[in-house]
Image 1 (tube, one colour):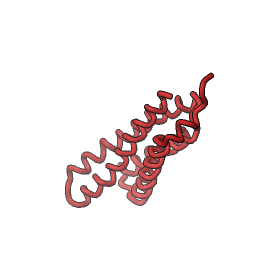
Image 2: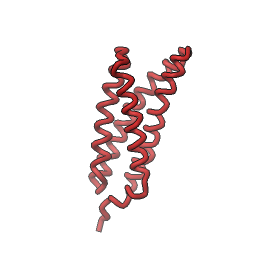
Image 3: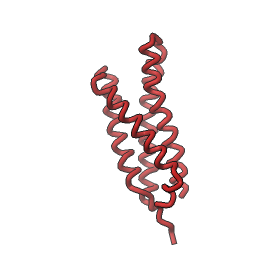
Image 4: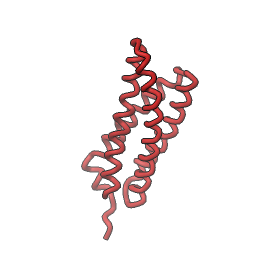
Length: 126
């Protein structure tokens, strides 16, 4: 049960960090060089947040939670690694649509794990 609470916190922080990235990119395109210098470390932090989320989702799944959180987080991690690689190579053809997909998925996962119905899917230990 406690793993779900931790998963909720990490998923929300992860989603907020993901949502901050396109804002910083827009500020950079508007002429602020500082925004791109902030965009890079937050992008790397997003990957580490996803690694933590993957660990917590695994613990939650092993204690009776849904495997969907684990699967979605693993897919997001793969997408985030691709995203960082495309950012460093300045391949915007992939960087932008992958980023949009990650923001949507991150928000969906955060909303899903925070729903009260998610708690009811856990197995109760006898």
